[in-house]
Amino acid sequence: MAYRIGSGIDFHRLTEGRDLWLGGVQIPHYKGALGHSDADVLLHAICDALLGALCLGDIGVHFPDTDSSFKNIDSKILLQKCKDLISAKGYEVVNVDSTVCLELPKIKPFVPAMQAAIAHILTVSIDDISIKATTTEKMGFAGREEGLVAYATVLLQKK
Image (tube, rainbow, N blue to C red; front, side):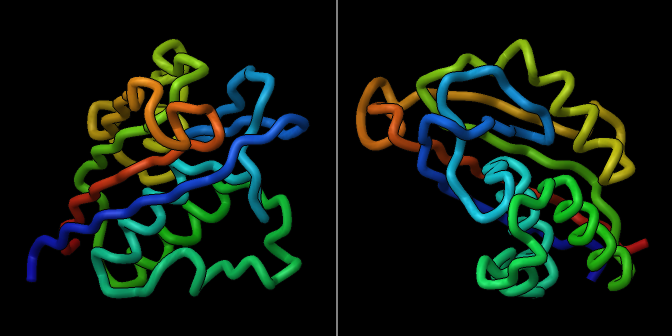
């Protein structure tokens, strides 16, 4: 098969006293995502999309939260490891389309830096990384600023 599509989703609770990392970029905010790693929901969703496209399981299979070696790990390292896994199967990334859902902070000013960080790891052009943001209009856990979610879709191509 020449092309494979994968989708990923990730959720994290927001809490005071943690840094907020999105797309490999630290975002100034009074709350950060809670998790075993740096809790970068966007990179985690992309990791799951990459792994899912090739039926390689999910991020929890490869980087379990029961493994202390992944405690507070930079999710850019996890993304690189996922990219290496798909490369070993003979595939490369064509593009990524993603959406981050949160009320605050507004992330638009940080999107170019996130695109650059992700594009660098996946060895694609910045133009191949789409990052969108939306709110839930104050509804649900994201609307109450209790958590955030990211969705990602990737297209892979056989090398």
